Image 1 (cartoon, helix red, strand yellow):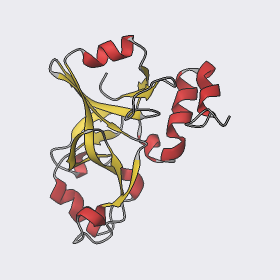
Image 2 (cartoon, helix red, strand yellow):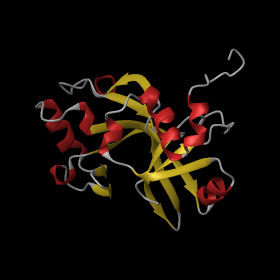
Image 3 (cartoon, helix red, strand yellow):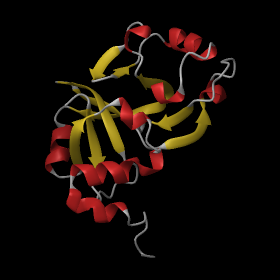
Length: 179
């Protein structure tokens, strides 16, 4: 399932993952790892790396694990050595110093890289159990188009695409009591 999207079921009642869209980047017999694409923080790269010129790239909350570490997904492929191909035109990680160099020299646009504080992780078979319990809807392979979408609209858009009958949930506010 590497490269697939996990869309939180509209009735998922989990304080952290409600309305999340996760790109799965790694899956093995040990477990799975991914990043929440639509939880944008108030922080920018320049806040954690002030020495980086042009560091106006937003940081997203990737998940509840290792929140003190910075990770990144990108569309730069072999331009960043040691990158791991996830799917289509999305890559995970690579040489961080190379990436910073490209950013400092204005050679990267914000839609080409997404930074994450932390990641989402599942133990062996945990993710499969959660999918069978319908906590997650699984979508097609992710593509760099996702980096262009407004983070606030991503869950609504993906929910409607993966299951058209759930489109009604996309327009209900987070707290349905005023609706």
